[in-house]
Length: 345
Image (cartoon, rainbow, N blue to C red):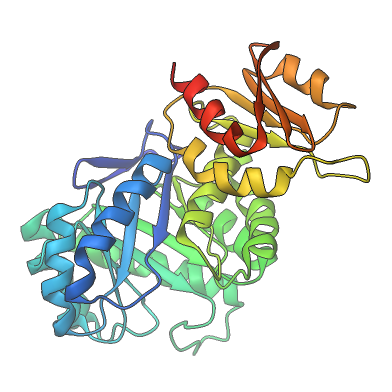
């Protein structure tokens, strides 16, 4: 969204005037007997707002499952490559839409040149993905963020010398300060699309805080074209967090805005359980609406009047609001279905 250059990943464009894209990474090994469930998961993530999904490509044995998933996936599929350049070439043969290589371990220049040529011949994008924990040898004694930027620019120059420009760059660290500093330096010297993320960020709550701070600041500074919120946990949570960051910054206009009360001693309506059950279902709806889930009669009616749809309640009684007006009184056990039905009417 904020870079002049554009990368093409299957039918998806990153950079230029295109929206900031949301990515996640499948968090298990590829298995041939699980491709159906993976494809189904990808479909759900795409409905929630995910634009790309990455897979670890660790051996040639991954090729068969990867190829089937890539052939059936509704969104572009990325192969994550470390150590062995031949795996990158193998992934390209097996329908990868994009390759991520790590300059810290991909090997000699001639090896990555082979990868670039294969990508060029097959219309595949490449992400130059640097992590602060696996950087190339620092024989100049550079500051870590300077080494990351210098390495990325060196790779870009080598790629361009081979006529390859379908490139995305990422500089990630588990430190938010390093992530901010490295990407600011990169943006000043490079106009290729930038993928943002705080690597090894932690559990859902911790990662969301760290990622919001780093990614929110960079995106506000017009740095970043695609993002991932790395979470030790559910890939769905990664997509939810990333979409909410973009929505909060005004960079994503569509999708359900879900608000809910934190609960206090007055609540008798189980908002936590209701929100956990509804969250993914609501985010799969292609609707620009606000939904409020409130736990008592103090703020419930007021929030309900400002939301497109709302649920509040007392004990087993739930009150469904539509466009600020009381629409229906229902039993708690049916409240979720009644809300979803009302939204879909």
